[in-house]
Image 1 (cartoon, rainbow, N blue to C red):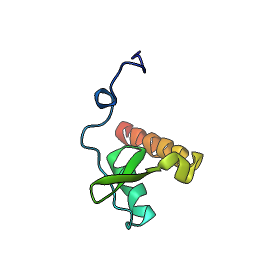
Image 2 (image 1 turned 90 degrees about the vertical axis):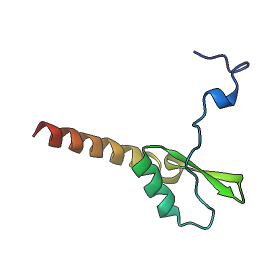
Image 3 (image 1 turned 180 degrees about the horizontal axis):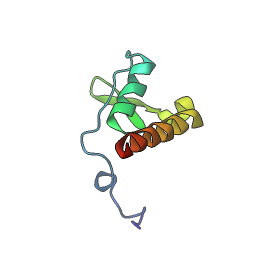
Length: 80
């Protein structure tokens, strides 16, 4: 419900997001996203953003299905 023309990015962005260096393996980025519960991780080099890794772009719908299955499994484990 915020106005995109007047809302500053700082008011909707994650404060101090986790980031990854460009020389790290791709799998490391995916693991950090999964463990942290987020779908994007900025790639930072020398304190400057140089890119973004997105789980959706990287793995497509497969990761979304995987996340759904993990949540369902956890829910079933809680019930039992």
